[in-house]
Image (tube, rainbow, N blue to C red; front, side, top):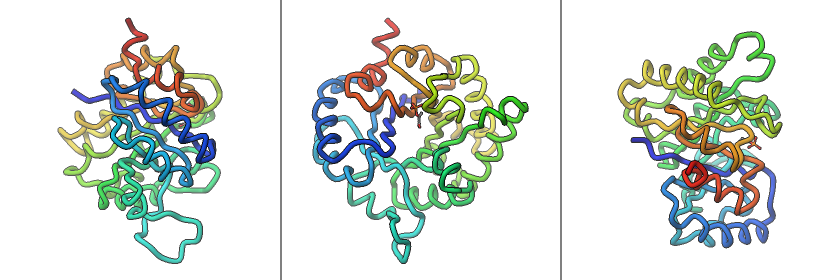
Length: 252
Ligand code: PEP
């Protein structure tokens, strides 16, 4: 059984004060949640949100990392710094980083390997654009991103990696993939992981991301290969993200 993992990607939203207010309001709402719950605030708010979540069942994630341990990399954040902040996870390869900051799958692979070496678990994002989907290239694109981004992950660590399937056309657009379209992509990803990692693929969690809301979370999570969600816009409000994190209650 794979435990669902629901992660909030706040992107460049929330000051420290706003992030702490969220954490304080949010933690009691999900104290009895069955799923694993993760918040990824901006770097500036990680320390304060970590303190506000202390003793709760909500984990902390970074939105990015640099693969080197230290050095002349102005503006970057190293894995040991995330360890010191208490980050359990870090998101790598988000489509915004790939598209806006030119990050390649090879760079994502270095980040994922560096995180694993520090026992911060990577959430590795992959996903096709609308043009790629319309050209019938979805599986080819996913395969190439998976191959490139996971090249440094040994099978012994595969189950520590979370994959986030985020069709670019569904991110921040309000256009969610239908459960059927999402499941089709997740099944393809699982089959690829199986070829690459063998039995560990059954333990790897694959999140769906792209306009997940309280209203559609339960239906998406009911798909056999969807093991959670990476949520942007709908994670900025505590009660909205709590309803997503406790998606089973909406299914009743
Ligand atoms: C995201 O950017 O990871 C995301 C899924 O955003 P949204 O939920 O706003 O589509």
